[in-house]
Length: 373
Picture 1: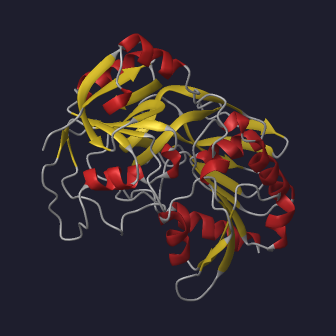
Picture 2: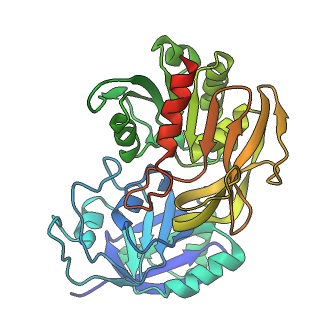
């Protein structure tokens, strides 16, 4: 197969040559790397990756093709994709089509043949940054392409949850007997999340990111869930106000990933951008109360600013403690409120394809709802 030349251009002027993969054209986003050796389809369709150019550190991508079962949303959300060695043949009994064809069909501009080890080292040293992928008629001299990249919007200050949320509310029924009604605020929710809650007897009402506290409380939920999602939490004000309204009424709250950052903001804590973020399925996180270490799935470029030495923080909603920390860099990976029924984690306990060390957090949410009755 003849491939069109392609070029990955970083905002600091570093370039990586390769060949087009997926659609031919140009695209822009924040260059990040994902360390997962499996689960590329879940990564591509996770709304949290909206407006990001994702480089996979695993060298062989596309081996199992693409199917209709592993989609975490209705479409691919990454703005660009970077791989080293794309599979020449997809081989899996569930495969419906090749990854190359799937990317092309959805208009996702990608690049293959890139030295992803060198790219990852560069991003680790310099931090995540804006990037562009160019192929076909969009190729040009490097200086011009760098200027195009610099003209693209940065991730800081980007309010993106409203671009990925569901346009209309929908319900995921409980599996078996309905024990709880959960209002889930879709900030970029993955399909696996309401599926896990449904297996715990929850009837899940998935609601747009624009939902207000009054609308949430009108459902008379046993608990409210705030999902993962993309963008800068410092600019996402509506969900913060909605969460405060829920906390005021002492309705149990559970947040994952972006939802953890929204809880932090609702409590009066700050957030900040990580140098290159956590993205992959192999992050060690310690639960402070037990000392137990979970291997967890991550996708976040921002974090909550709170002390990780065990000192509770005083907030308008009482005392709050950091419940989980990342053992690689001591980043806050979870919050637990001591005076209101609310907790959150920064990682993905509902991770597909895995790991599944932390799926017990859904049991914790059901116990919190039981205790609030």
